[in-house]
Length: 375
Image 1 (cartoon, rainbow, N blue to C red):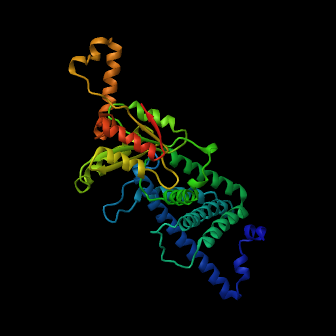
Image 2: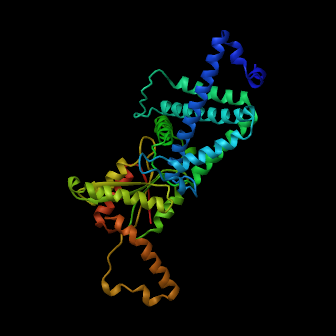
């Protein structure tokens, strides 16, 4: 029972077979304790060095360095030894055992839970050499470790859980962005695909309608992007741009534009997806965007495009600087500065299309049974 395991320190010797069994138990305990101590000392030091090199926590730069031969983490070994020695000075193995048991069980629980998540998410590159497992055994290992942890001492178990949750929250919000290929992306992909397949356009109802927007980007109106971001009201938001030319010669351009659009969306905290189409004409590019944007039942139902800008004779163009005070001038300069990046992203705009093509584009949008917003 629990009382015997905690207070009877000679239970293994008493259960052994004769004097030979008693000596074997003592030797086994000594060897096991020594190997575990060395494994924890040097294994923990390597983990501490890796954490320091990943810069997950501040003020840990001292532990990044290793020896010239073998990259041995000597500073980390020293700190690990100091912590272990401090626990030994407590002087009671019964006081130390619940602490180490709780954190070891929590480590094994986390490993089993990670394996469980990778297995149910169907990650293709998760191919462990040990084949005799399933998500059932992973989940069983997770629950078993938690049960043992609380069975040994529920107070230390709670402390260990609180510590792990606190570290997880800190890393979630304060740690630097690193590409580790963690299970989160695989799990999100699995869930999104699962529920996307369950969406059915045939079961759509007017009560659950919301605007899902495809914005045909304009290089002269950066405020329109932010306006559509507020207009979508939880719906899909796609920012579309067309590139005119032969597909074979525009691959590098499209890849660069897509990367720049993704960075633009991230920098401006937009909840949008950039989409780029390549076509022989501007109108064909926008029609391809209207036809192919979205996935499954998540498709834009509202197309936002700028009004056609008619080119005026130069004699009718009045400079805004001549009829504005200093505040307006500063505001115009600011808009010009903000729009400079957008001009590099948008190679074509509906506002500069031929009037006939613009009219045909609007007609085809209605044929696709989409709503139109002109601004």
